[in-house]
Length: 231
Image 1: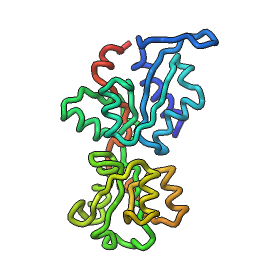
Image 2: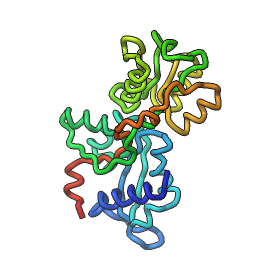
Image 3: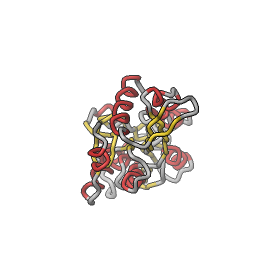
């Protein structure tokens, strides 16, 4: 995660936070409260936790509470219910929610390409070895599901016809599913990708090498909230 990414995110958060209720800290300055969610424990999403750890939010006058949710399918209801005002999540779940009637809007793209890798058990040496087996994703309709379809298509395979997708949860759960032999592969990103390699699993395809445009991580909010806080 680069400092430039952190600064861009802070600017977005600051813009979204204007006119929110504020509270005074014990040291005196007034901080604007903002609830933010992160939809995955991936390396790219550590921007929020990094900024919080460095107390960078306070420099911008913000009192930010970060909530971790598992996948975009859970991030959407967090936004639409008002539990959070901004979420770092994949664009696809947000787009699907809009098609279903949600009034969400993407205010920035943080990662604009797929960074997943399809990691497989040692006995899977070629794409043909995956036929009739399963690959772990977070949930149907998630960015990991999209990544799995792209990965399998690049390998000459099709979802359902050749390989089944199984929703098991976050990165750690997916890695565990492969290690336990519940599935033959999983869509992973760092830091769990490093743990997978260390445990002897193989990368069958790195989607980053395809350089295919895809908004994997975006800053998403409700349109009504954005319009009410444009200052």
